[in-house]
Length: 362
Ligand SMILES: Cc1cc2nc3c(=O)[nH]c(=O)nc-3n(C[C@H](O)[C@H](O)[C@H](O)COP(=O)(O)OP(=O)(O)OC[C@H]3O[C@@H](n4cnc5c(N)ncnc54)[C@H](O)[C@@H]3O)c2cc1C
Picture: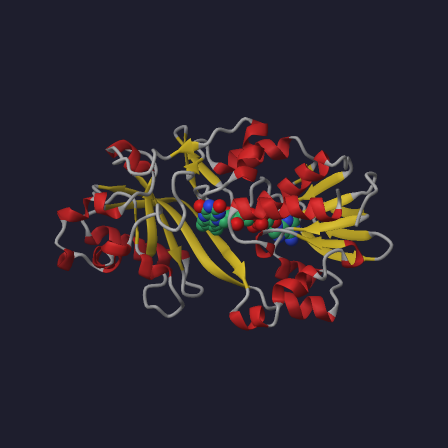
């Protein structure tokens, strides 16, 4: 337990986890909190791209059900949710183009299923079960961020002390925690890691236990492309088969696509790569699927590549990975938060930050 409100607390990472931790620590009276971020902007996987006064998401897209903690932070910084219509409504064209909705209402009926290649054929064949994303508890509470989700974290960060361009290169723990970064050295009484924990373990004076535990973390190679496409009659949709297990034969092909703004010829494509495909190979796959249904691929206007969904395999779970990691909390002044500790959604990540502060710092 940390009780001294004068403690110097460092947080690595200005994503949802790091910034929410800093906010909750400030609420608890801590005044010497510094967030170290390697990028020049806040948000981490909450990253938005802007063109012509509109935004597209390159990372997190929507808030899932029961987002009370995220909504609480949004209210504090004056960001309104951008809501879907109530469940059961038939989305009008304008709305449907902005978000996901049951695929029966897409224009798939315009095509004969047998004519549809790749993603779209698979989509059509799987149509009966493929409702997006009103299934799985993602329903009426679902909302987006009109100005982009990065705006939310930009507003949160503006009230906190965040050092950008401060990639952490080394962490050594003694009477204080010494953090070496590209922007100089920092000394803290406590350090909270929200950057990828497997990478942090490599630059930290980790114990054998920390090293062996955190080397079990795995991620998926996720690519997001915002592409300019002419004559594309396909609204937002989802190909469930493409999100499943490695070697499914459909990796590296678009899994979800979204038209966020009606009348704007920019579409977001989500792709899980098999392993290491180049950006141009992924773009070629998108182009192939688009052209197969008569679309005219113009360019990739923006893109991002993510180490997505940090997790461990079932062997590690059987080996009680989560409690073992939790047992390391606070060891030699270092604490863990972020998506690996909870689940890869904004809400779960933020809730974990709240929980960490309540349990150990309040
Ligand atoms: C394509 C995609 C779509 C998603 N869709 C959704 C969605 O619709 N809804 C939803 O709720 N969630 C979604 N997620 C998940 C959600 O974005 C994440 O779970 C959440 O943003 C993770 O926050 P975090 O702070 O734990 O990690 P991150 O956002 O990864 O933040 C970690 C931060 O640490 C920084 N960092 C890394 N290394 C260092 C270093 N050495 N030194 C200093 N700083 C460092 C990084 O630059 C980053 O800013 C999506 C994610 C992706 C990639």
